[in-house]
Length: 237
Ligand code: ADP
Ligand code: TMP
Ligand code: ASP
Image (tube, rainbow, N blue to C red):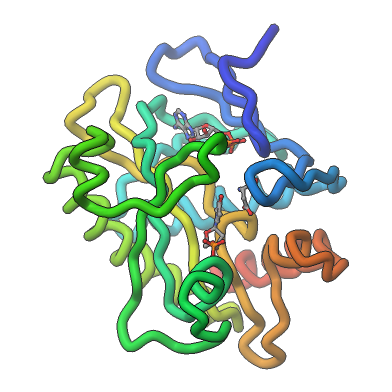
């Protein structure tokens, strides 16, 4: 058996149902568009567990997602979508590429959340794009883009409040959306929500609890993911 698609962190497999896929979380970690790579035992299990709990919570809060069910420790069944090639990033505090681009130091708190879009292309390094690029590149219709913006801010409200309960500051995160294969007029939240694609800082100590531990060689990467999972579990119970 070969997967339909093998990405940097996951494999997508066909199922018996033409409208769903099996999404398998791998133990691989990459950064800087795949230029930096490492293997972390349990990463797939931890990201699957965290993402499954977060998706369950978002569904309960009325956010339509691709999530169907957890199959086992490293696999979930998801609704098949045509991924929009736009990554939607929401930032509550300056960090990462925002700080690099603007000179505004990491940790600066924004007066309102900042949204940005990047073109999902490893070959081009996921470049920053705007509404006009999205229109001219036919990445999403104006109606779809309005929906992405609205949903991303709503997800930010839900996740920021939830992670605060977990003693974590949601600094920024990346979302992906897709058109349902069975009805392309419906857009749902897809891919994963895990410490791979979110910056989470401990509210008390400021410690980084996300993939920046790997990107910046801070050590204890899986220990941080395990701690995030523990807190997410505790606060959903
Ligand atoms: P990448 O392609 O960035 O290396 P991954 O290793 O995470 O990423 O691979 C997962 C791929 O599957 C991504 O390209 C993602 O956009 C895509 N994907 C996520 N959810 C779905 C879905 N429900 N249906 C189809 N494709 C999806
Ligand atoms: P950035 O500051 O590097 O642009 O990252 C912003 C957020 O998006 C951060 O939480 C990490 C996440 N992210 C991804 O999920 N995938 C990516 O390819 C990049 C660059 C960032
Ligand atoms: N997700 C990207 C990569 O795997 C970049 C990152 O998260 O830093 O290369």
